[in-house]
Image (cartoon, rainbow, N blue to C red; front, side, top):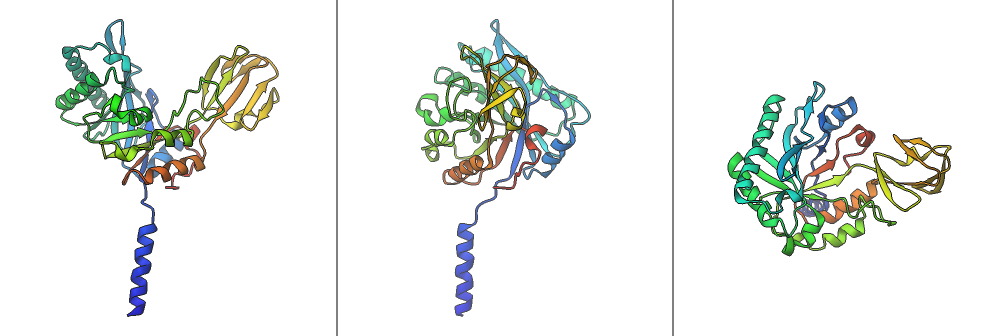
Length: 326
C-alpha cells in the first residue's frame, strides 16, 4: 500500500513540474512563394499544422487604398501545412476613413485573398490574420473594419498584438477578436543609438508585458523572432539596416573588430550589396536560444497553452536551429 501511495505522489509531482510543450510553426513573409530544401525540411518538422503566409500589404496612396507586394508563387512552394493568409495594413490606412470605405476595404481585401488562394490552389482553413500597428487614434475604425471583414468573409478574423498595445490597452483598446498573436520582438528601434538589442531585449519585453495576464483576450499565440540584421552607422551618426547579417559576416580582413558583435570598416568597398566607407561601423543583432528561453519561461506564467510562430521561415535563419527547446 505504501508503494502505491509513493508512486501516486511521484506521478503527481512529475505531472505538476512537467512543462507544456508548445507546438510551433512559422511566418512566411517573402513576396515570391518558394521553398528551398532547408525551408521545406524545417516546415515539415514543425509541430503545428499551419503556415502563416503574408499575402500582401495595404496602404493608402494619394487617398486610395492600394495592395502592395502581392504574392506570386512557383512550383517549389509545396507543403501539407494549412495556409493562414496574413494581410499587413498600415496604420495610416485607417486615418480619417469613412464608413463606406471600411466596407469597401474589407470586401476588397477578402476578394484579393480569395483570388490568390484560388489562383495558386492553396489549402487554407477558416482564418484570416490582420497585422496592423493600430493606435489610439485609429482604434475605433480599425475595430469596425475587423467586424466588417468577419461578416464579409464568414471566417474567423484574428489579429496581431504589439507590445505597446498590451501595456497601453486602456488607450489602444481591445480588438473584437477571439484570438490574437503577440509579437515578442521589436522591443526598440534599431535606428536609435542604444546598447540594447533592438530585436529583443528581454528586460524591456518584461516591462511591456508585466500585466499581460490581465489582457481581456485570453486566447493568445506567441510570435518569436528568428532573424538578424546589421546596423550600419556612418560618420554623421545616421543608421541603415542590412538584413540577415550574422557575426560570421563580420569576419573580413577589411573590418576591425571593436566588440563581439561590432566592427569598423578600414577600407572603402562594396559589402553586403552596399558601398560602405572607411570609418563606418556595423553592429550585428542576433537572437540567442537563451533569450528565447527567457521569453517562453516568462510567458508560461502568464498565458495558458500557447503555440509559437517563428518569424520567419528563411533558410538563413532555420538552418541548424533547435526548435524543440520548448
